[in-house]
Length: 111
Length: 116
Image (cartoon, rainbow over all chains, first blue to last red; front, side, top):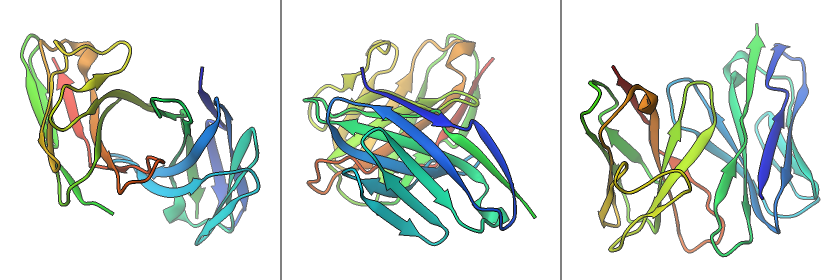
């Protein structure tokens, strides 16, 4: 059964203090791994899709990387506006192509 | 990316009643999905809304409780029927498409439902 876990559950950083969020997954053939950002009271906002091990994508202070078992979301010199919940999701190569979401990491960046 | 709106944005309902949530997209899309997000939890897929045919429901969700309509490629509704307090949640619609095999999804703002 496809599964996604994320760690840590919550993370508090000082402004400028770089760190990484982890997404571990089990899937029968990966079609894509997705990262989303969700602000309180809003729907998730799409950030990245990663397709194969070794791939990296960047957007401003965020960089997502992918291995065969996990993905990392690196946050460089975060600012308070980066505070949000970050969700990881995977889509396997099954006939149904269902997307499974992880539980999320709640990030707080303190000024 | 598509712009998605949902109505209502929030509602407080009495148990035993039903609520219909609307999802409108500003462009034609292939795939539309309905999710539930309970407080402090991640997203759980309720069903895929299929245009012109019955929705495809996930395990634990049934058509009698969550009937879905998708009359065209820009609109869908989800009804939460015979509500109980356990149905209190945020309901989100999302869209994906463009002929891609990967479902990069774009979400609406959500409908916050409280059942008393």
